Image 1 (cartoon, rainbow, N blue to C red):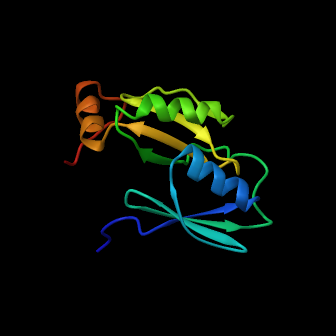
Image 2: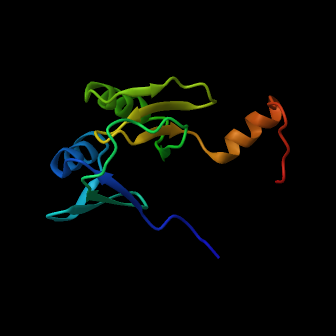
Amino acid sequence: MITGVNHITLSVRNLEESITFYTDVLSFRLLAKWTKGAYLATGDIWLALILDKKVRESPLPEYTHIALTVSIEDFPVLSQRIQKSGATIWQENKSKGASLYFLDPNDHKLEIHASDLDTRIQTAKAHPWEGLDFFV
């Protein structure tokens, strides 16, 4: 049985720039670094950055992204820090709860989100969208 996400691995074009973004902007802790990669962590998230010459040159066109949890109290400060970093905002927030959708230096789509699944389900029950069925 799956019990959680073990780790996330992201390919990067520039390891130093990526480490700086994840540590200085998103407050990940650098745990280990080698010539072609690094391990970082925040909360229960283990992030591996791997130097890869085949990293795409633009964001993927689809909606796929990684959403990171942030408290509502920390959201304004972190959101401002991300925007001041020059990160590209790839979508405006249209969902319930505070969210900021941005790109990392390698065009990976990320989101900081100050809400949880229970809140999302309750909001959807109150305002269901087309074809919505619940199984919980």
